[in-house]
Length: 210
Image (cartoon, rainbow, N blue to C red; front, side, top):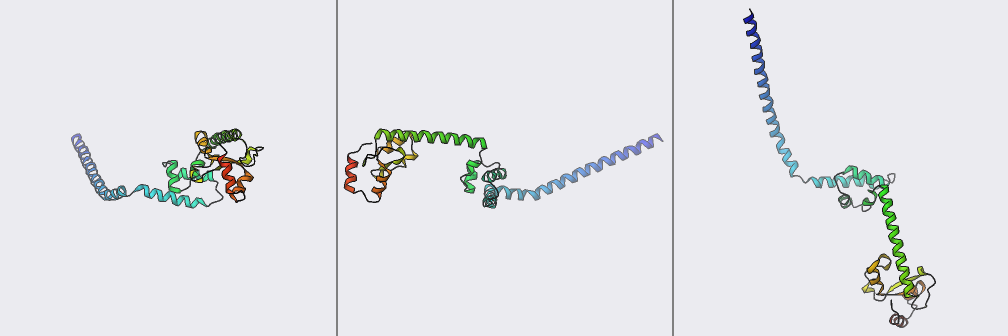
């Protein structure tokens, strides 16, 4: 009797193991079939230029929020950053065409620090220009020297002009000023309006050094 029970148990275990093995083989076969079906799709996705798709998506997203006046520029920048977290700041600027993104993407503290540095730089450059005006003296035509803000640099030869004097500093500023004469705002406007004869202006130019 005991032997019969043992035989029955062994039979049940044996057939159960066979069934499990069969199921495993079948599931493995199904996995292989599924992989064969998915592989071509994966290849197509790999061949597609992923960056182009993302670029178009970022552009579309930007155009959706661009004209929305209810959203601040800071909020727009944050949404763009969240939408494309892997993109660098300059890449987003390039793809959206929004140059101010690099500014609004900064934190409030970073923007405040940049403003302080910029104000300090502008103040230093303004002081530098005022000191140079004082060294040169007043207007080369009428001699006015009361207000430094009313004195302006006039390029003798416009073709040699590399940039506005007010936007330069250091060696570049001194180099540019050497191409100019100092005029008060009145004489400067009168010259450009043709009220000061060319011969008179040439006389002042040749007898004035900066």
